[in-house]
View (cartoon, one colour):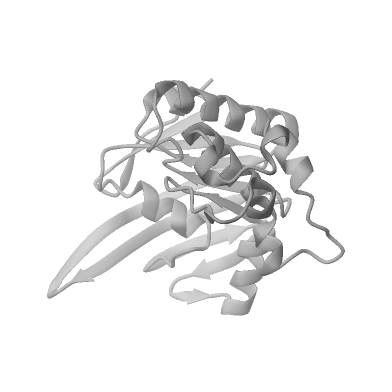
Length: 229
């Protein structure tokens, strides 16, 4: 479904070049749950942002469904990339980014204020049920626990029926119990809905929810998947 070949990402910091990623090659199968682990600054978020079409590599190739998204400095037009981000991916971050004045139902449906797939209608109740939030639809974020806020953010990512979920440190602001809850939620969405999930985490227990775990250090893949379920 996703294929990266020799991806490199170089940032300019003043007069210094910083190599964030170097020579990354991998394949992600449809319906796979893949976790990326490694120390801070190892390139995990940079890699997943490139895989999710949120950032551009400096060089290398990224293919989605067998078609080039980026190839050696060239990329699809921004209008095509925007369409891919809207229709293929759902994004979940460490911060919840919920609008405090809106209810859970309104936060879940928020993507439809900006875009929707042709013929689709917002169904926050269906997404809320998947995440066990059907009794919280009329609550506002200030009335929710941390775990409930993150589940609301996941439901919002699901409402446009994406094929791939990108979750970047989704338990970074949660305690152990809530982190386990989110891990079980992601595992269930992968198993029951067949969603492809790309997870970035420092939490090795959470990483074990995945089918395959890849470790990054200093911008390179250093370990084959071995920790997943």
